[in-house]
Length: 257
Image (cartoon, rainbow, N blue to C red):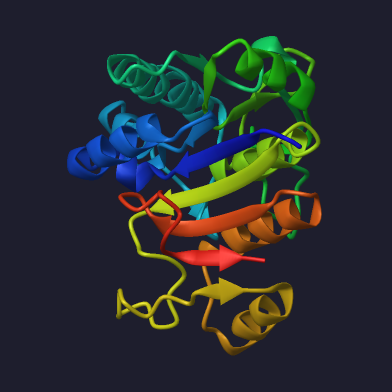
């Protein structure tokens, strides 16, 4: 019987909200057994870029990453956000280790090709995540804290969507553990009405998702999040939950199945 492993992905909005972040880190630290934390940080990157006179450009909710912006996200994701989370987890008794995909070659990707005339720049689409290497760290009692940065094996860092990092990490670890993947963010779950925070859809299957996508119930940034969740389920992840950052005990939110 496989040991349980909980992977929690925390979004940039929660990272910026001290109250939500403190509660999330407390609850994450209290999770028994093996665990991994994966974080975003886009809002902080936008703030730091603006302070340096660098404009943030987005297409479909995804960041265009030119050379200047790559420097910003590498500093913010791999340094500022990652190391602050690691330090705070240490204070909560969790022996955490901050990683980008380049560290121990844990996540390799390729530069996203130009599509429909959009060049995202130094943005990576994941080729592989090394579950065996991560499992060695986990078995040694280490809790990986993973930043949304990968590398291409040719010396280049690439900005990579944190939801994708979470999904690919969960898929890579599924052969070794009974994996629960939790996407935590500032809402209670996937909402049927974006203006009603209590309109949580309790369960979404692939068929449900196609229907909600077609009728516009689910749109925008939630689309890739659920695509990643369904991809993880298809690859053997036991369960995926999308829930409020202060409710990562798994008792609420939207279960993807």
